[in-house]
Amino acid sequence: MSSPYSLDRKGLLNCPGISPASKKITEDIIRYDADEHHCIYRAPSIHNHLSHHLLAVYDLGGRPSILQNIEKRRQTMQRPILLDPSDKDIILTDENWTQYLDNPNAYYGFVKFFSTSIRNHGVAATLEQYIFSDRARDEGKMIIRTYGIEFGHDQLVATGLAMGAVTKPFPAVLFHYDNPPAGDVVTNDSRPRNRQPSRGPSLLALLKDIYDSSQLAPVMPYDREKTIYDNLRDFMASDRPRETRRIISRYFVDYSSGEVEYETKPELLMSYSETPRPPVRVSTTPDPTCLGDPANDADYHPWPDIIAAALPFPDAHLPKTLRTLVYAAQQYGDAAPGNAIGAFVAGRPSDKLVETHTGTAQMDGTIFVRAAGMMMDYMGWATYGQKPRTDWDRSGLGWDDAWNDVAASIGELHPIESDSPIDGQNCSEDAESKKV
Image (cartoon, rainbow, N blue to C red; front, side, top):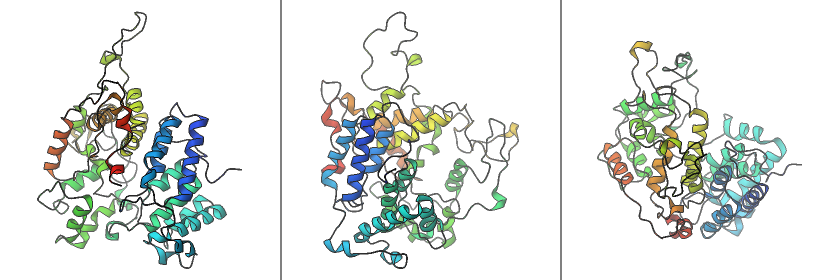
């Protein structure tokens, strides 16, 4: 019989390198983490990243030793699941659970509450009742929940629901979950250079609406020292109509999210190399019978080197982002220029196509490996001796000056920290762990 602590499904990538040993160590670490640790680290407001860091590296084929090192570097950051001994006395029921929302001390109680529901009714019924029903309130984090669903790990779903329950949400005014009205349904166009969604606007169209709207312009001037939360508070406090502050929710897009940053600058990414390399090139000469030479860009396959360099990287954002890029490359890597869904404004005749953003007509399936190379060059090829950066880019969207910061950062060179091709010390810790 399956255990709620087992990984019952393969991940989206399921890369070669996954083994019985790596699966067992991942399951064991996640089980201990779920049973013993709180969802918030000792550092204020930082959620426990361990499980999704582990699963991202596991799905990319990470070795058991790397998975163990991920756990070790986060040990000093963890808090016990009971913040206070009296937390164990909090008993949640269907009648009182809403009274404990946003209360970190109720995390242990919520884990037990949702674990019982999943055991008795299953994951689907639990999500339906506590996430999708009219009664439910879901304004917290989603990432652990979706990892649990993806990998078939019931306890991870329970801890994810519990984390969402005790997390103070963004202002509720931003979030509404209505489907697009019938009038927004777009007939899918089979022409390869004008692909549109079968329903609703494309992501690129939504971004265009946001950037074209004067009502959604960010509060000026740009201040690189402000956090995402500072900018959100400034926006909510500005003298704009309530309807304007809620317009984002029509599309269920979090405008403060940094994940869409590069999609609004396709010409920047398409100018980056489609064969990104680590700083140390192959120094050997292949046998003459080989049908290609990896030293030549035309013959070089960049993904294996990128994945191998990302697995032990200390900042969890990098392997998680890389997993997304690898999956996108699997799904859309063969897309021709202009073939991306929403690359052109909907409803235009084929001889009068207009780009949704400058450069989308040239954007093709190589954009994902270009983005991966840009990320590695910015953050550092730590397994090749470069010192890994600790400043994962959180610069604000909407300000032109923020792009100046990004361009300057990408142009910086990383010094080689040792003569060895692999400097293990560089992969052992980052600023997040040093602050604790």
